[in-house]
Amino acid sequence: MIKKEYYRLEELSKRFDVTFDEIRYWVEVEELNLSFFVNNKKFIVGGWQNEKGFIGFCIGSYRGLVSVSSVSKPLKRSSNLYGAS
Image (cartoon, rainbow, N blue to C red; front, top):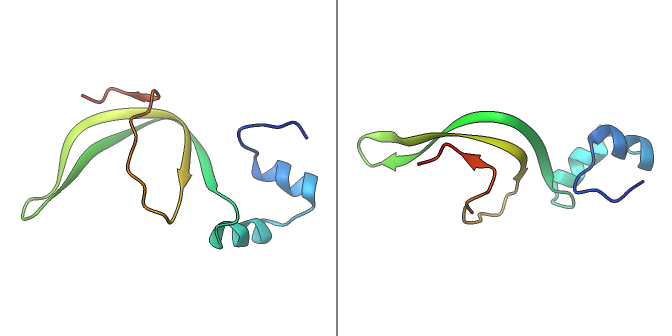
């Protein structure tokens, strides 16, 4: 298997003879990072204001990998972020 930035679920299953449930378990106990690819998805950037609820600041789009973690990390501006003002 060649070294890559990420591997698809099917590649891991075939190469290491593991099931989806085993991979899911490793993600749940934080032994594997959960990442997925989004292709040019639009989103709203905003925040919560006390009595007004959610307020949108701008609309953007993103293409690239998204990683989900249980650890809170500050957001970093990405070169894949377009349309944000």
